[in-house]
Image (tube, rainbow, N blue to C red):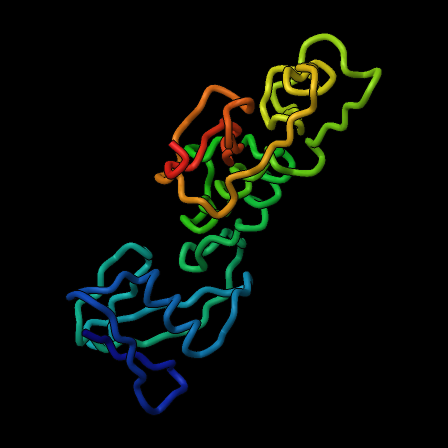
Length: 213
């Protein structure tokens, strides 16, 4: 569907197409601005007038029927309120809020487009892996309660310091192989690294290939 418009100084009508039977005044202004590359300036507004009835549409929410002919004029603004048809321009402020809050923004209360919220959610989901959150704990600092994000690189498990690793302190050193490249469905869980043929899985548990059972 479409409506036809022209500026008062123009000779020919231009056309704006849309889905449905009506288009709102605000959407029409945005479409005209895009077609004519007017840009987002704050010192004027577009006045839309019905060419047949001479009715001036003052409410941006008013619906204009298809096939209507319209006259368009630029009118100065005595004050400079935000024009509704300009759309949202707060994506930068949304991104800034997410950065400042270190991924703790309440997405349910955040303003902005769906894409802004998706970007914020992605930022929050990767916050725990930010290098600023990494901990390097060595030797004499390995005391007291073990941080929840500390992983023993000997056994790839949490809950103990590497100096207290049961594998490292079990007497004879044990060569631990990893199950890289072997599908999980081909592995059978075992109790620990001392089981014959035991390999460490990506989850930190131990298993042996099913063919060895």
